[in-house]
Image (cartoon, rainbow, N blue to C red; front, side):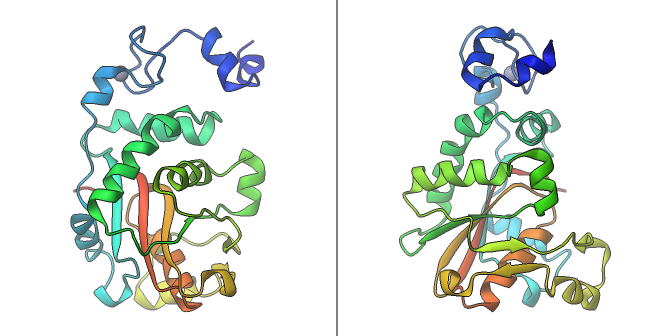
Length: 235
Ligand SMILES: [Zn+2]
């Protein structure tokens, strides 16, 4: 029964399933949204861009850090129930949490960065096999909404993942450099001279975002900042 329900379009599903807030899991009759008003008001806001960049220096040398900004909306370290938003996005094929929260992420990006020179939004790509398995890339869902909110072009035809990469955090500096080589392919013509916002669902150590950003800079992109729904790396 549940399996059949999950195959229905989101709108139809909304009418059929009992309404539970995806964060606190309490019944939610107060709104049509997936996140109740209480959880929305108490959203644990992620630290600002400078704090996140600074924290990256725990794992990376300064000259290894290739992004110049890192905006994130929610801190899952302050309240890990908010991680449910990401699980929903990743495993249940629901775009609703992204529709409700991405406009808030867009506002935070506007506050933290001078966006007038930014001209491209791209998702961190999933490996092809993983995307086929899941049917979609959750970062694409967030990226497309950001594109509308910020009025900046979105493209999935610029950055591609070549192979599964080892987890960067367990490697030393030289191994990280080696692991980086050939991890991504970029469309040089489309990335050249661009100021890019790279989008992912979660920022933990920033390793995959940093790797992707480095690949973009190598083919001539001017600058890269990251935008993520959840920051999970706070100490
Ligand atoms: Zn709630």
